[in-house]
Length: 137
Image 1 (cartoon, rainbow, N blue to C red):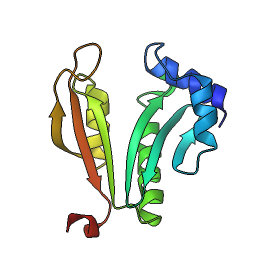
Image 2: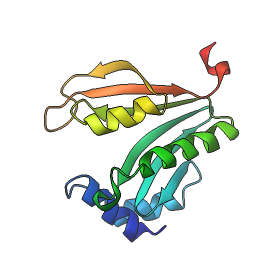
Image 3: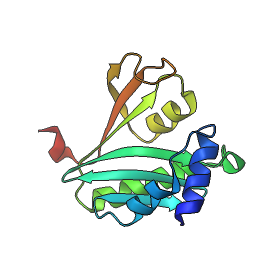
Image 4: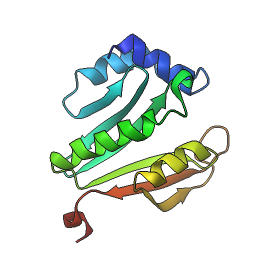
Protein backbone atom coordinates (compact mmCIF):
# COMPACT_ATOMS: atom_id res chain seq x y z
CA UNK A 1 0.00 0.00 0.00
CA UNK A 2 1.50 3.32 -1.07
CA UNK A 3 0.28 6.91 -0.80
CA UNK A 4 0.50 7.25 -4.60
CA UNK A 5 -1.48 4.07 -5.20
CA UNK A 6 -4.15 5.03 -2.68
CA UNK A 7 -4.49 8.51 -4.19
CA UNK A 8 -4.78 7.09 -7.73
CA UNK A 9 -7.53 4.68 -6.70
CA UNK A 10 -9.33 7.34 -4.70
CA UNK A 11 -9.30 9.74 -7.65
CA UNK A 12 -10.50 7.04 -10.06
CA UNK A 13 -13.28 5.95 -7.70
CA UNK A 14 -14.50 9.51 -7.15
CA UNK A 15 -14.45 10.81 -10.71
CA UNK A 16 -11.11 12.58 -10.42
CA UNK A 17 -12.03 14.32 -7.14
CA UNK A 18 -9.91 12.18 -4.83
CA UNK A 19 -7.73 13.11 -1.91
CA UNK A 20 -4.16 14.23 -2.59
CA UNK A 21 -1.12 12.00 -2.01
CA UNK A 22 -0.13 14.16 0.99
CA UNK A 23 -3.32 13.18 2.83
CA UNK A 24 -2.55 9.49 2.43
CA UNK A 25 1.08 10.04 3.47
CA UNK A 26 -0.14 11.69 6.67
CA UNK A 27 -2.81 9.06 7.34
CA UNK A 28 -0.41 6.15 6.89
CA UNK A 29 1.67 7.51 9.77
CA UNK A 30 -1.16 8.51 12.08
CA UNK A 31 -1.88 6.15 15.02
CA UNK A 32 -5.58 7.05 15.15
CA UNK A 33 -6.06 6.04 11.49
CA UNK A 34 -6.46 2.53 10.12
CA UNK A 35 -6.19 2.02 6.38
CA UNK A 36 -7.35 -1.46 5.52
CA UNK A 37 -7.08 -3.09 2.12
CA UNK A 38 -4.64 -2.48 -0.70
CA UNK A 39 -3.96 0.07 -3.43
CA UNK A 40 -6.96 -1.17 -5.46
CA UNK A 41 -9.59 -1.39 -2.71
CA UNK A 42 -9.35 0.19 0.73
CA UNK A 43 -11.12 2.00 3.54
CA UNK A 44 -9.78 4.71 5.83
CA UNK A 45 -11.04 4.60 9.42
CA UNK A 46 -10.57 7.17 12.18
CA UNK A 47 -10.39 5.37 15.53
CA UNK A 48 -12.04 7.13 18.45
CA UNK A 49 -11.90 4.86 21.51
CA UNK A 50 -14.80 2.42 21.29
CA UNK A 51 -15.97 4.03 18.03
CA UNK A 52 -14.61 4.31 14.52
CA UNK A 53 -15.65 6.35 11.53
CA UNK A 54 -15.17 5.41 7.91
CA UNK A 55 -13.66 8.51 6.37
CA UNK A 56 -13.63 7.04 2.87
CA UNK A 57 -13.85 3.77 1.01
CA UNK A 58 -12.60 3.43 -2.55
CA UNK A 59 -12.40 0.66 -5.11
CA UNK A 60 -10.61 1.04 -8.41
CA UNK A 61 -13.10 0.92 -11.30
CA UNK A 62 -10.98 -1.86 -12.83
CA UNK A 63 -11.91 -4.23 -9.97
CA UNK A 64 -15.40 -3.03 -9.05
CA UNK A 65 -18.19 -5.62 -8.94
CA UNK A 66 -15.74 -8.40 -8.04
CA UNK A 67 -16.65 -8.54 -4.33
CA UNK A 68 -13.40 -6.93 -3.22
CA UNK A 69 -15.05 -4.09 -1.30
CA UNK A 70 -17.35 -6.55 0.49
CA UNK A 71 -14.42 -8.76 1.52
CA UNK A 72 -12.21 -5.81 2.48
CA UNK A 73 -14.92 -4.17 4.60
CA UNK A 74 -15.79 -7.46 6.31
CA UNK A 75 -12.13 -7.98 7.19
CA UNK A 76 -11.77 -4.44 8.46
CA UNK A 77 -14.84 -4.73 10.69
CA UNK A 78 -13.49 -7.98 12.15
CA UNK A 79 -10.17 -6.28 12.95
CA UNK A 80 -11.96 -3.34 14.55
CA UNK A 81 -14.13 -5.65 16.65
CA UNK A 82 -11.03 -7.55 17.78
CA UNK A 83 -9.60 -4.22 18.95
CA UNK A 84 -12.72 -3.48 21.03
CA UNK A 85 -14.32 -1.02 18.63
CA UNK A 86 -18.02 -1.24 19.38
CA UNK A 87 -19.65 0.98 16.76
CA UNK A 88 -18.62 2.17 13.30
CA UNK A 89 -20.17 5.26 11.73
CA UNK A 90 -20.17 6.68 8.21
CA UNK A 91 -21.88 9.13 5.88
CA UNK A 92 -22.73 8.18 2.30
CA UNK A 93 -24.40 10.16 -0.47
CA UNK A 94 -28.03 9.21 -0.95
CA UNK A 95 -27.44 8.83 -4.70
CA UNK A 96 -24.58 6.32 -4.24
CA UNK A 97 -26.69 3.18 -4.54
CA UNK A 98 -23.71 0.82 -4.82
CA UNK A 99 -22.22 2.10 -1.55
CA UNK A 100 -25.58 2.03 0.21
CA UNK A 101 -26.01 -1.62 -0.80
CA UNK A 102 -22.44 -2.47 0.28
CA UNK A 103 -22.94 -0.93 3.71
CA UNK A 104 -26.34 -2.56 4.20
CA UNK A 105 -24.81 -5.98 3.38
CA UNK A 106 -22.09 -5.27 5.95
CA UNK A 107 -24.67 -4.65 8.68
CA UNK A 108 -24.88 -0.86 8.65
CA UNK A 109 -28.25 0.74 9.38
CA UNK A 110 -29.46 4.26 8.64
CA UNK A 111 -30.00 6.50 11.62
CA UNK A 112 -30.16 10.05 10.20
CA UNK A 113 -30.07 12.14 7.04
CA UNK A 114 -28.24 15.41 6.38
CA UNK A 115 -30.16 17.19 3.64
CA UNK A 116 -28.17 18.72 0.78
CA UNK A 117 -24.89 17.83 2.51
CA UNK A 118 -22.68 17.35 -0.55
CA UNK A 119 -21.69 20.04 -3.07
CA UNK A 120 -23.78 18.35 -5.78
CA UNK A 121 -26.91 18.69 -3.62
CA UNK A 122 -27.01 15.04 -2.55
CA UNK A 123 -28.03 14.32 1.01
CA UNK A 124 -25.82 12.34 3.38
CA UNK A 125 -27.23 9.15 4.79
CA UNK A 126 -25.72 8.61 8.26
CA UNK A 127 -25.23 4.93 9.04
CA UNK A 128 -23.78 2.84 11.83
CA UNK A 129 -22.86 -0.76 12.45
CA UNK A 130 -22.85 -2.18 15.95
CA UNK A 131 -19.90 -4.52 16.41
CA UNK A 132 -20.45 -5.14 20.12
CA UNK A 133 -23.59 -5.44 22.23
CA UNK A 134 -21.89 -3.28 24.88
CA UNK A 135 -22.40 -0.25 22.63
CA UNK A 136 -26.19 -0.64 22.75
CA UNK A 137 -26.41 0.23 26.45
